[in-house]
Amino acid sequence: MPPSGSRILYIDDDPGLRRLVERSLSRSGFFVECAASGPEGVEKAAADQFDLVAVDHYMPGQDGLATLAQLRALPSPPPIIYVTGSEESRIAVAALKAGAVDYVVKTVGEDFLDLLRRAIEQAMITVRTEEQLRETNERLEAMLREVNHRVANSLQLVSAFVHMQARAADAGAKAALEDTQRRITAIAQVHKRLYTGQAVDAVAMDDYLASLVSELEETWSTPQAPRAIRLSADAVRLDTDKAVALGIIVSELVSNACKYAYGPKEAGEVRVALSREGEGRFLLEVQDDGVGLPVDGKVKGTGLGSKLISAMASTLKTSVKYDPGHRGVSATLRAVC
Image (cartoon, rainbow, N blue to C red; front, side, top):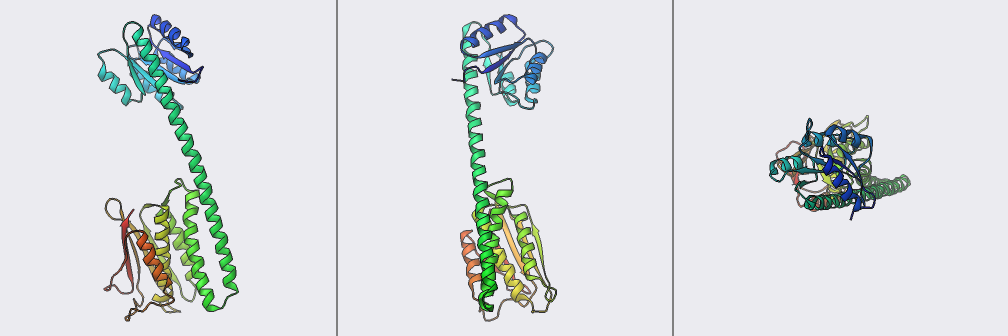
């Protein structure tokens, strides 16, 4: 049942039927107000708050469909039930397409009043349920934003601790801790975008990669060995886990290129491209024009980066491929969005 005291506006040019509807709905606990024409009904709906409006189709001057369109154009339109004749299914369908939540066939006698009352009760229950679902979703989204905010802050704090530890470490440990700090930052950036963006469960990868690439360039490029990192990214959206995996892969591939592709006093460029590839798929490409992969196949450094790339690609149910014919290193990854 609808809440006691729900306010109903009934628009109909028939004064006798208006009185019958007002008495019948009032006995059911509704507060009912009537209007004798479409313009009068729209004026009342614009000036006051109603829980539901019922509109008759046949009215002189302005029919029900025109009135329905004006009601729907109000800033906060109420749910609308359309009243039409017994042989007017085409009009009823048109009203539903125009935004009416239901329609009632006008008949002679008490049947119409009962049908109208039940339609109003059901429409208000449906609207109230939708409002409750919307409020629940809004609360859940707010909670997820707070969770992502706290996760990002915690990761930033861990990154700061690692940075402090690296300052007191020897050269080998310092390099390893700096690599760890970059990986933590890549993950923290995902959660930052989740709590500052419109969506709480998906990351806009063009925006995320732009920020990640900017941080990597700031880290690796120096006046003595400039590293230009170029990004081209389509508007691809990925869920949190996939975004984290792809961010770590990009971070590792770019870092490897910056460290090993060019000489310590040589300028170099690294190119990152993310593009859509067919429906629901994407392609990642990371390229440089440096010395290329070692001929003997031995991994430079500790090998942890290569293991991370393989592990993250596995979570995306794919693998990273290397083009042996490319001058330098060309790594590609294809996966489902």
